Length: 81
Image 1 (cartoon, rainbow, N blue to C red):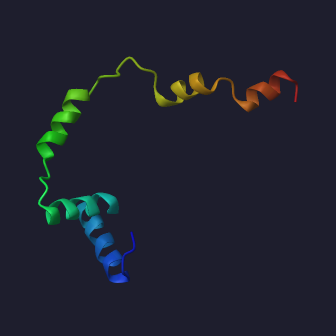
Image 2 (tube, rainbow, N blue to C red):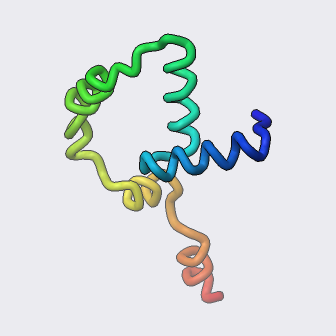
Image 3 (cartoon, rainbow, N blue to C red):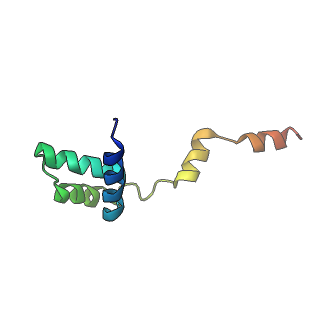
């Protein structure tokens, strides 16, 4: 998406003022302009419904190690390099 300098400046200022990303600011502006509901309640309900869903799942670094297997450093050490 191409924005004018003035649009980019105003967008950045609005995002900063609201404490959100520029992408989120664009989505909110579009929702408002297109008459789409912001539906914050639905978003919060989705968070509530899924919170804790994967409580027993490994955290990201552990999961990544499981998926990737041994790292290059570990394999090189095994080879004595």
